[in-house]
Length: 39
Image (tube, rainbow, N blue to C red; front, side, top):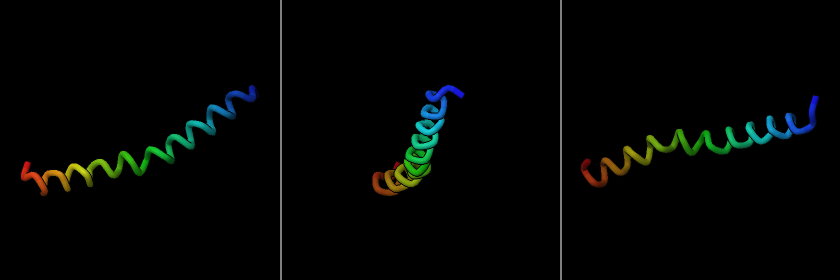
């Protein structure tokens, strides 16, 4: 297997793990902003 594919897979995994909490936390922020500003 080409070495670059291993690197690409690792990068995808790291990005997925790093962005997961960010995207799941968006709903929390939206809810907090709605409560604060009365939207």
